[in-house]
Image (cartoon, rainbow, N blue to C red; front, side):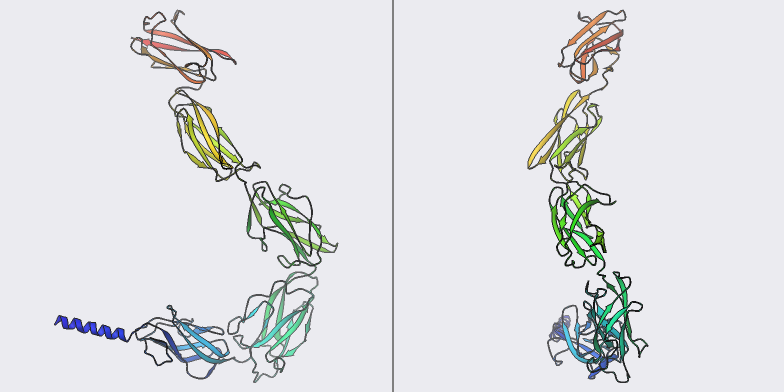
Amino acid sequence: MKKKYLILIIFLFSINNLFAGNLIDFVITIGGTSYQAGVTITGVNITAMDYESSGDGPVKMDYTGWVTLTASVGYCKITATGTNVTQNFVNGQWSGSIVLYGAGNPVTLTVTDSSGATGIAYKIITPGPYSRLLYIIKGMQYTPGTFTGYSGEPEPDYLVTYLPFSVTVMACDAYYNKVTNFTGVSSTYVRLNSFAIPNSVTPTYKDLRDPDAMGEYVFDMTIMPVPDETKYYTIMAEDIINTWSAKFTKPLYFISQNEYYMWAEINGLGYPLTQTANVIAGVPFDVTIKVSHSFGGPTIGGFNEAVGIKAIKVPGGENANPIYTGLISLTNGIGYISVSYTIKEKIKILPLYDNLYQGLYYVTKVASCVIDVGAASPYSFSLTSDKEKLRKEEKANISVVVKDIYANPVSATAVDFIVKQGSGNLSAGTVYTDFNGYASVIYTAPDANLENIICASVTINAAVHSKEIKIISSKSTTDKKVIKNYPNPFIAGKETTQIEYYLEKDSEVEIKIFNIYGKVLWTKKINKGDDGAREGGNTVIWDGKSDKGYTVGSGIYLLKIKVKNSDETYTIERKIAIKK
């Protein structure tokens, strides 16, 4: 019985798959022949299909996804969602209402789902009644069926005071579709207005119903501000008859030919000069000087002047090192030069020019983008230590400073440290220099009287260069006036005591031990440079016996060490105790 049920389930599953193939496309059904822009269109049906068809293919009943609607002109909206995305399909279908805002004959409506399946329908959409104006200027793009009617801004430097420019004025419906049917509109006398700014407009007025207009006309306009300045001026298109809402107002940026801007560009990094130019100390980089009626605008033909430059520091703006002492010849408002700077710092290049061009017009000078001057490759380095003498376990900071040929600190350079002679520990073997060219390690002195050599190596021009520094380590003291011994007291004949002292340089050394009566019991002379007479810590052993070989008795004895070298002669002393 169970086997029969299983066979039936498999059969039904197979039948279902037979009639549920892959989604291929959508079929869109919209009743009626035409609609007005912005009016709700009801009874829209979208059906998911198993294969490409004209509507006679099988419906993909198991499709439950959603689709996105787009129109060839303007916006499209699903009324139920307020967006251009439908709800989920049911049994492979979606039904609802939509609004198309763009007018066209026809408008193409496209549906697409996430798999890439599409469907297309065509419908005639007519503009609504005349209700507003729109103007377009060179550089702006007309976008009917939207809520602004345009995108983009006027082409830079197209609008210049005291020079004519063209303005295309259009009669539109509520969604900025151009209107050509003015049924019920008695007149459309349109003009351009610049408010309090003097202007010249040709023609003065235009009825957009005229046969040579048909809802659209091109005006030529010139604004003549006093004073003549580069700034925003507001231009309005208005219908002086239908004053309700048939207006379009927009502030526009105009350039004055009486204003001059001069700026520097580095290595091709131009307006708006917000990037950073990275250069290397001593390596030439390109400086371009430009002059325009607007910052970043086209250069001025006929501006053939000589201009200087200077470097200023960032931040602060104070003068940096001189960068070029000559003049740069500009031809038609542009000039070039290649310069270099040798200091590792951030600078800008500022043009140098008399503020008045031909004694008439003020020239505004603008500095370049930031120039980050980095160090050149490593050229030399120094090796130092904050201490030259250490007792056991004491620490010294050993530093390397790497510089380029211009004495700039070089960062990110590997420095290798080793203990070449002696012993002791380094906190690291390889350290990279920081922004200031520094790399440092901590050296910990050993428990030994040694002359330790620390070596640092840096690769310069593909060759390894090394420098060394000497650190003297002492087991007990680094003070030449101090003697130590241990154990103290000790048992003569059974124990020995270590006598430790420090020498600042190789010296002649004479050690004597006296009893309380001043009699010399033991003497040891050490030649300069031998063990016990070397620069640094020294150790001498006394076994508690006299020069004659007998063991001294318990008590207090006086130890004197006489030191003699080329700089000085001095004696240090200490009491030693002998116990039974």
